[in-house]
Length: 125
Image (cartoon, rainbow, N blue to C red; front, side, top):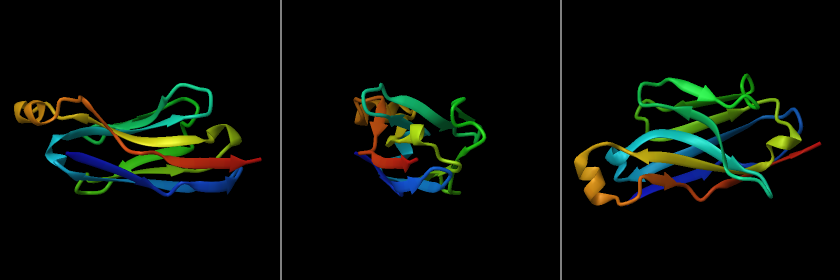
């Protein structure tokens, strides 16, 4: 089993900052390409920022220049530093990872995607 546990969400005023963390545990050898998604009320879940196994990052246009995704050296914890927060950033933020391409991972994990339970971020105006 793979476990992704987010933390660091909360209530912040516009212009403030938060740092989200996502700790991966369990069968982490089958975890690849971790990233962050978010889902605002009444909207579909959308990607926020991604980082691949080589460390290359990318982020959505709405957060570019404000949000920064990173991992620790062991690549077992994913971070999202969020600066200059806006009310429209209010959403549940989810940690996501893809199943690694090892044949053994396909045997052990029928799902191609792993998700955390989400952490609420609320930005007040």
